[in-house]
Amino acid sequence: MKKIAFIGGGNMAASLIGGLVSNGWTAEYIIVSDPSVERLAYLQHTFGIQTTQDNSAAAAYAEVIVLAVKPQVMQSVCMSLSEQVGSQLIISIAAGIPCSAISQWLGSQTVIRCMPNTPALIGAGISGLFATAVVTAEQKQLAERILQGAGKVSWLTQEVQIDAVTAISGSGPAYFFLLVEAMIASGEQLGLSRAVATELAQQTALGAAKMLVQSPHDAATLRQQVTSPQGTTEAAIKTFLNGGFMALAEQAITAAATRSQELAQQLSQ
Ligand SMILES: NC(=O)C1=CN([C@@H]2O[C@H](COP(=O)(O)OP(=O)(O)OC[C@H]3O[C@@H](n4cnc5c(N)ncnc54)[C@H](OP(=O)(O)O)[C@@H]3O)[C@@H](O)[C@H]2O)C=CC1
Ligand SMILES: O=C(O)[C@@H]1CCC=N1
Image 1 (spheres, rainbow, N blue to C red):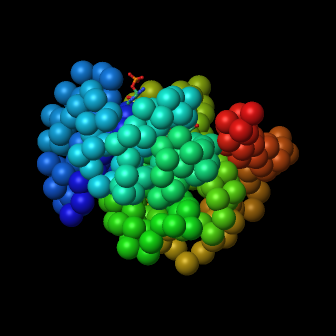
Image 2 (cartoon, protein in one colour):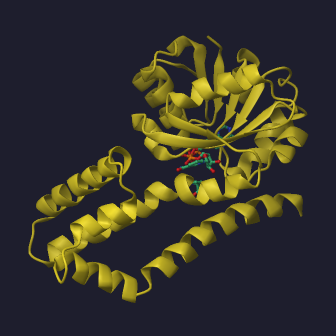
């Protein structure tokens, strides 16, 4: 079992650490560094892992370094770690930061770029991964083992595909949450209590998600199965489609992918 350092102990780091610990990774082999003492105390208390405010100490301890800070601070964080980085495997989860930038800032070519999502916290995430040419098959396996604690993994053949992964699964949970927010608000408007509307919307999201992964049918067929001719679902779906739902969804998801590209381009300017 390898020693892993998380640089940045925010939401995504906690999701990945939660997956690792619940999958049996030894907690003492995980260290997280973060500026906030309160955050570190929370992470230590929740997962039993080691903590520090010193990024360099965390990096020097580990065989794998997971970069989990916001894209905006990634450059300064990497540059300050370059002395501690040698043979460690680097895994970056930052949106929009290419492997080439990470390599240049850290002075290491051994970089895997990864786009996870927040359901990682309950082991139901999915991560898209891209490895630079120098990453070995063994290191890829190690990255998979780390990320698998958080859910499924999907290897990409071209780094540019990460922008699409970011738009679909990285940001994707927020799209579903938005729909659930709208369903709860509508339920209240139609006379339900907030608690009842919330329970109905949540359980419906869960049931629909389970059907999507367990049923042999695709999403369109499952939707048709709910939609009785001239019934209630048809009334709702027609309203969505006539209001431009498909085009709007495509526009929104393209905006996410474009934003991911823009973040990368800002770095090269
Ligand atoms: N949220 C998501 O769904 C996903 C996020 N990502 C990527 O994951 C990364 C982290 O995102 P997320 O967890 O949401 O963000 P958070 O803001 O929750 O986490 C970032 C953490 O890094 C800490 N931090 C800030 N500066 C430093 C520093 N110099 N050294 C060490 N730690 C520092 C922050 O502390 P403080 O708050 O005190 O500044 C914070 O605790 C981002 O790059 C994002 O693009 C990828 C996939 C999905
Ligand atoms: O919104 C973001 O930029 C990050 C990347 C994917 C999910 N959250």
